[in-house]
Amino acid sequence: MTSVNHLSSAETIQLFERYVIPNYVRYPVNLVRGEGSYVWDSEDQRYLDLFPGWGCNLLGHCPAPVVQAVQQQVATLIHVPNTWHIEHQGRWAQMLCERSFDAQAFFCNSGTEANEAAIKLARLHTPPERYKIITFTGGFHGRTLGSTAATAQPKYHEGLGPLMAGFVYVPFGDLDAVRQRIDNETAAIMIEPIQGEGGIRIPPDGFLTGLRQLADEHDLVLIFDEVQTGCGRTGHWFAHQHFDVVPDVMTLAKSLCGGIAGGAMLARRDIAPSLRPGMHAATFGGNPIAARAGIAALEMIESEHLLDHVARISDVFRQRLETLQSQCDLIREVRVLGLMIGIELTIEGAPAVQACMQRRLLINCTQGNVLRLLPAMNLTEEQAEQGCEILGEVLGEMTSS
Ligand SMILES: *Cc1c(COP(=O)(O)O)cnc(C)c1O
Image (cartoon, rainbow, N blue to C red):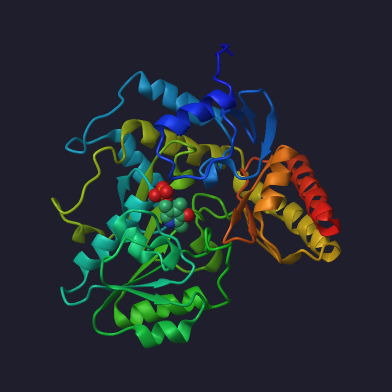
């Protein structure tokens, strides 16, 4: 490896204090290098990362096939606009559709953009008087204004109003409430099959099937936001396959390109043409680099049998965390589906995240009291056990203090 002179964490923090808008709460660490489920800071401390890239690095840091594909592509053709045909984009679309449902793809650069495309498509596809979209409390769909309005969490709306009209919020898991709120202005239902940012909330049995039936009865577009759940995270290619329910539209991003920025919306083939020429675009969407990275990510999951591996690692976490729960009063509930892992505490989670970081374990906390792990698919069993062990120590100390 070539040696690089890194800024220290302290020097980096100084630059941020002066020049970077402080819209994020950041840890006081400058991360400079990653490999698999480990990252290093500029002081050369190594961390075990069970939340790599906020869910984006589903194949670990710097997965070799993605690195190679990007290195090769960046020296061949970096960008051409979508006024041309781009072979890699076409092949990538084919691979995504073959692994999901009979669809066509639109490419963009992020999750929120994919959801904006889905919102536009739902409105364009249905008659003009139908514009309402039902979304769910605790959901998260992104930060642009359409996706913000779709996100039924008041804390993300403060000071931004008036928001885009037409979103109808319903409690997650409440099928009767959905039925009651459908009227002749409803165009779509939009939902994360498993709520991620909302605290790893898994829908009650039959809920997604029920939504599919309601969408069919009322001719609504059923949109699954699989930005966090998709691309192998749950041990299936997509979470809807776990629940045996097929959406009309699916949005993807985060892990889609193995750590490179990229997003996509897949829409059923009879719905997709409603996004007609001139109605929507993304300049960098489906660019050759993202496409090569996306293809490499799918190929790596297959060649390394990572979907099967997810089931094994998921079991390790489930067993370890359930044992921990039986020993630790601070854990209210453990929720695991594939490599979406939520540990709901009876207390605030932030101090546990800090204490884990001091032991060089990286995890996340959402909704105030839910510790969230989104580990890489190629995490080893030893790494999973090591992570659970550190977590157990941390929670143990918090119990006794
Ligand atoms: C992260 C996330 C988004 C937003 O993705 P960005 O790439 O940050 O725009 C949308 N939906 C879900 C479910 C997410 O987890």
